[in-house]
Image (cartoon, rainbow, N blue to C red; front, side, top):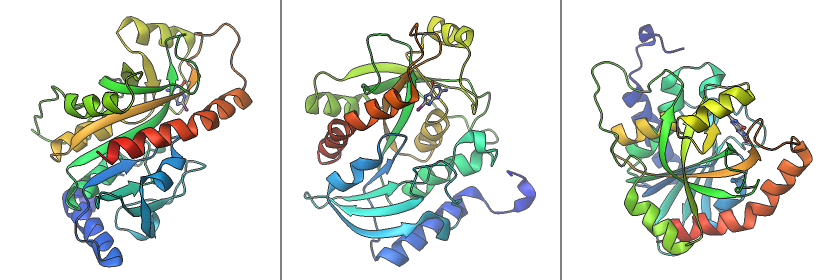
Length: 270
Ligand SMILES: Nc1nc2[nH]c(I)nc2c(=O)[nH]1
C-alpha cells in the first residue's frame, strides 16, 4: 500500500531499480522504454537483439506478475540503430490494489534509467464498431475515470499534448492507415456495463481499458515523451449485438501480432 510510513520515496525506489538494471546489464543508459500490454508480447523480439533478461520481481519496487501472459521480465534490447530499449513486461494494474506508486514505478524506473521516451501499449475494448478486434489505435488523449492520480501533493503537471504529436506523426509515417482515438481508463477489474460504455462514448472516448492513463501522467511528470498505442481486443460491452466469443478475441489478438510487432519495431527504430 501507499502508506507514507513506508518511507521509501518512490523516486528513490525508481533510482534503485534503475541502478539494479544498470548493474545487472552493464548498460548504464537506456533510450526508449516499452511497456507491453495484452496482445503486445511478440513485439520485443522484433526490436533488435535482447542482450539481457531480468526477472522484474528481482528489481526494487517491482511485483511478481499477476496478469497471465505477462512474463514478469524486464529486457534490455539493442536495436539495429544502436538504441537501447528497456522492455517492461511487468506492468502493475491499478486494480491490483497496490496503490498508485506501484502503477507508476515502471515509468519512473525508465526515466531514472535514462530513457527520454516511453511507449505504452495495452489491450482494450473498442467503442467504434468499425474497429474490430485486432485493430491497433494510436492514443490521441485520455480520460482518467479512476478518480486517482499517480502524483501526490501540490504536483501540478500540464497534460497538453501528453500523447506526443511528434511521436504520433512518426507512427503514422510508419503506418498511414493507423487510427487515432481517446482512451478512457476505468478502475476495473470488472468490465463496463453497456450503460457505462454508452457513457464513455458520450463523453468522447473511443477505447476503454484498465491501464495507461495513470502511467502516462507519471511519465510526463518524470519528463518522458509518451506514445500510447492500444490494441482493440474486443468490442466493449453492448457495442456488438452478439458478444464476441473469447476464442475470437484471442484469435484476433494473435492475428494482429505480426502487424503490431512490426509497427512497434519500426516506430522504435526511427
Ligand atoms: N475496461 C476494459 N478493459 C479492457 N481490457 C480489455 I483486453 N478489454 C477491455 C474492455 O472491454 N474494457
